[in-house]
Amino acid sequence: MDLEDREPRALFRPLTLPCGAVLKTRIAKAAMSDSLGDGRGAPTNAQMRLYERWAEGGAALSIVGEVQGDPRFAEKPGNLVLAPEMDEARFAELARRGGANGCALFAQLGHAGAMAHPPISTPKGPSALDLPGLTCEALTPAEIEALPAGFARTAAMAQRLGFAGVQVHAAHGFLFSQFLSPLFNRRTDRWGGSLANRMRVLAETIAAVRAAVGPTFPVALKLNATDQLDGGLTEAEALDIIAALDGAGLDLIDISGGTYFPGAASASDRRQSGPYFVDFARRARARTTVPLMVTGGFKRRTEAIAAVTSGTTDMVGLARALVLDPDLPNRWRMVEGDDPAFPRFASSPDGGVTAWYTMRLTALGEDRVPDDTLDAHAALAAYEARDANRVASWNARFAG
Image (cartoon, rainbow, N blue to C red; front, side, top):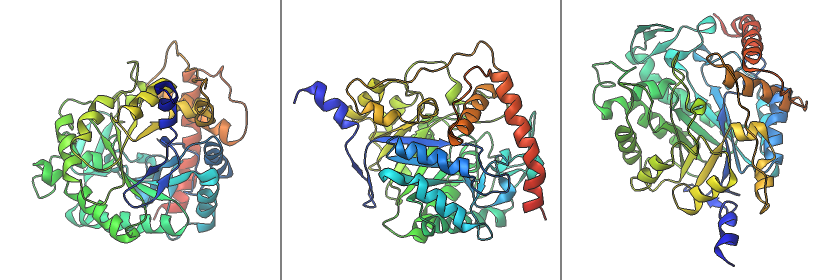
């Protein structure tokens, strides 16, 4: 077998995680906020079908984005809420259908913190902030101390209902990312100041989650390589966090970057060609024994193969590529597998491109042919109107 034959096969080798779980290939559907909950925290039929389609399409790992354990701090009213009072059968069915075809379905444990959606929450972060587009209160010490146990309860519930693993979300400007960032975290107590203090609650949460689910259930972490904001988390600090968490019981570290801070460009809206964080992953490889996953910017099969065969990463996280083609892993198994055709937008308002992909997810979940004539402005209008319509039902379910 020559090198040309070996390299594509490397992308389809199984990966055994430290806990003993086996992922069938090296291709993951990375977490996205699919916004397909029913507006009352429960999975919809369209959401179940969407994750079933990704499983049928050949993904080895699929991560449900923004699964909230506490409805008071949701990112959007389309999020799921995995809590004792919810309809467990709906979540079990999501886990079953999303876990078809040997796909491991993980729940991403989320908490939006300072960036919780104001119409359905009272945003609270590490520190009180009053910035253009972002106002929040500070979490009290008691509220911070309660976080690890809360995440642990949600993880244990996900395990019991049939999810194959969990991912602790510490990226993209959400709560744990806020604690890690000196831009958001201005505390002067044991949760602020030094990097060791800023990462304290994250480390305690990972330990609590691991204790709750036992040694054989996968626990992953999503971490920013950088916030891409002046004064935010730096790459050097992110590498130190990865090193400090080596031996903490993690099975996979998913490296991404950027933030949804109002007005900031997300990593997925960057215009550079090629994967975004492979250089960072190469440096991280020397700082940890935990398997790595890199998410962001993978558009071509050759890029995914190169990242894995070089040893830079163990898993490739695909997001928008799998919105364009949910069967992409199966296509990439073929030597002449097709790459998706990414759209170009002549103009887009802030959040318009993300909204375009989000509305396309709805079509996929409903087994409709997506309307590719929809522009980013119309997509954003439809997305915002849907969220506005859900606010009343969310508040009726969770307020008080």
